[in-house]
Image 1 (cartoon, rainbow, N blue to C red):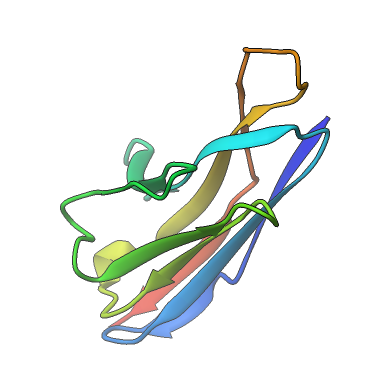
Image 2 (cartoon, rainbow, N blue to C red):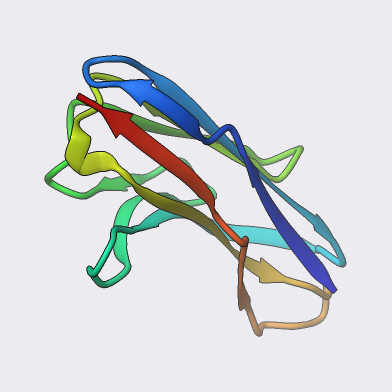
Length: 122
C-alpha cells in the first residue's frame, strides 16, 4: 500500500507566498511522475504542475512564472512553491504520485493525497 500526504495549506494574502509539500511512502520501488492538481469551487480538477523523475516540469498557463515544482527522488517528496498568489488560486490542492510498487513490475499506479486547502484573501 502507498500513502500520499500533503502539508502546508492555509490562508495567505494576495501577492504573498505559500509552500506546499507532499510525501509518498509505503510499498514503493520507484516513483515516476509526481504532480499537483487543484479543485476550485464548482470547477473541475485541473493540473497545476507536474515533474518527471528526470526533472522535466510542466505547468498550467495560469501559474507559469509564479509557481515552482521541485522533487526529491531519494525521499519521494515533491513541493510546490507558490509566489504572487491570487484570489483565484484558492482551491484544494492535491498531490499525486505515479508509483511502481515492485522491482519486477512494469505496472504503475497513480495514488492521490486527500488534499490541502489554500485560501488566498484579497
